Length: 236
Ligand code: PXP
Image 1 (cartoon, helix red, strand yellow):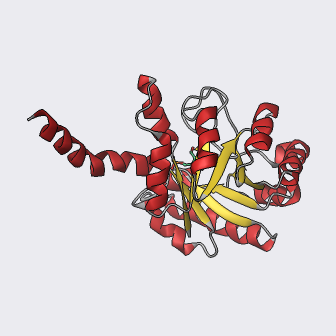
Image 2 (cartoon, protein in one colour):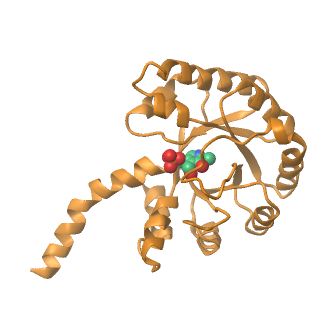
């Protein structure tokens, strides 16, 4: 499985002060040097973390691929045509949500999404649809012409270690098999962490995992000792 690292929360931290630290471009570079096979960012309508300038710089500096998550809006379509990321992952977006809460309702907006997918593909962009692992959404996704789905692993992640884990896991496994039988490639992500990620190996043919929050959270601790030591040396 490949690992796409989502760097949105490096930008969240940067935006808390409004300056340049921590630098999203340096963060992406370090991710690439340490095993990330792509960099994912979600350009939200409210620009709460990643900003347009981040995306425009990343596209020039990345050595791997940029996977740009976006809502199905005209504004985002324009940005995609201009920036031309390697891939776009279409996600639902609600202004008030803390993070992407559910999958895209492809079945309920088939015509609109099919049209959007067609335009992105005509610009040479690979398209993925972020959907809940359900038969209805997988079948609808296959009709849009998108090459990939990304299965929302949020429910599985929340259920991990509880009696609901197996049910949620089987939804992922069965949806992946169905998607592959319909010619789709399958990614997965949301809520994956250092404990629950290992079961993704039980899903045959998963292409890429997109993981952000748990990696950036762990980085605080794995990097904190060195950061304090360096400052302590400077302040001695
Ligand atoms: N995939 C998609 C489509 C997402 O929206 C997100 C969260 O922005 C992720 C993956 C990564 O989720 P997490 O930050 O929980 O690892």
